[in-house]
Length: 248
Length: 250
Image (tube, rainbow over all chains, first blue to last red; front, side, top):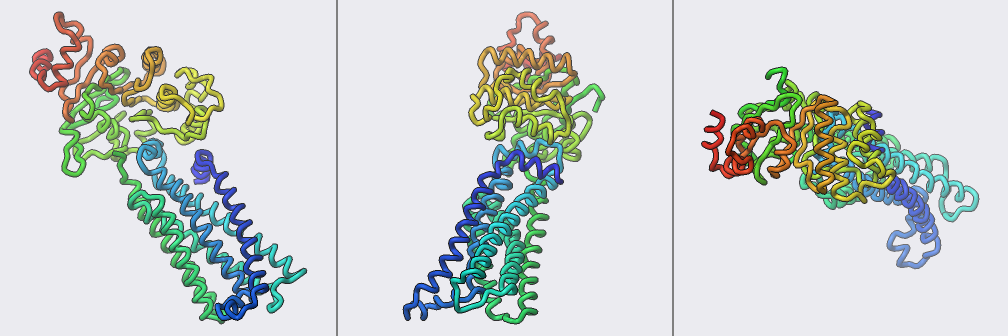
């Protein structure tokens, strides 16, 4: 499996995805400071009534940044799945992919694992770094003066990030499967953005209602479990389809 | 299937939805020969090649390569064959050598080695130039190199001279001869160009409207006086000469 993943890396140029991840990291960093500063600068009645002061609270700042991160990396994972899976099994490229004496299921699994690992690691690194930088600068010279940034707030943000990574795997694979029906890259990307936004909003709403730690953990486990189930189901179903696929 | 047979198809039929593309076809390719598969555009040559390489599954009948059923033992069959079907597809950002190295990695063998294979098809000087910048002829040569670099026992080449200039065509003819004589390969190649088959093949199979209508050694026809090869095959391919072929076979 490792050899197949290395071969996938060899034939696909992933530099563009790494550059996109670095850019996403910079955008997230800028976004965190932007919402923290805006909530402080704006003090009009209209802004307060619109809920703007919600971002005078670290948990909410991290939550919003987490949703943005999920949408960005959801889109990136959609593009990668499109390139690695849909592009590979469409038209004449499929003839090349099927000309090797290697199990089609194993090749598919190698592709899925590789995209999952790259997008997950990118998301963890490129979201943690802005969090950590923000945590450090807030510890030295805070922008948000109405709240206190504790280790537990930062730990909660990282825990949510962990659940989001699992969800990202599910979102990417489910979107890819939807796009695979018509072999359409735009379908994959739009599905990923919709699913990411839906997941982000659901997560926010659930966290808002389930304030206690135990119910928060349960919520995370349920969401992670749904993502995992979707991933395994799509992998098995797609593997079966690709094994029987013909190149007309 | 005899041990001297490289490829055998028996009562092969392929349907796409309601259309029957290949009808009850039979074909036998002996080991160590160049088998020219002749047919008009759309006659079904590529479809049969795709069934031999596992890209399509037969609706009925069997396709055997090196004694193995392609449908049941696809991976084993793929290990023993090399193929070039339709226009070859490459990883455009990689060089010719990198494309071949990748192919060898997947095949799990060192084969001829990339340097030797590129030299054999006249692409030795391409260096790090990405395949995306190759001409049509260069791509075709590289596609042929990829088909044989892992030293397969059977080479399946669909219209291999497409896009080649006269020099390139001559080079490939010599290469095919060398692959058979020095490396013991069997070559099954398709073409709709009569003269190409005449120059390259030992044996010819003719497909008309999805059915292989005759198979014969070229020497048999050449040995008969008063028959022009071109007329002989034109008659068969146009469907008018079935009786003509049968009469000659008899």
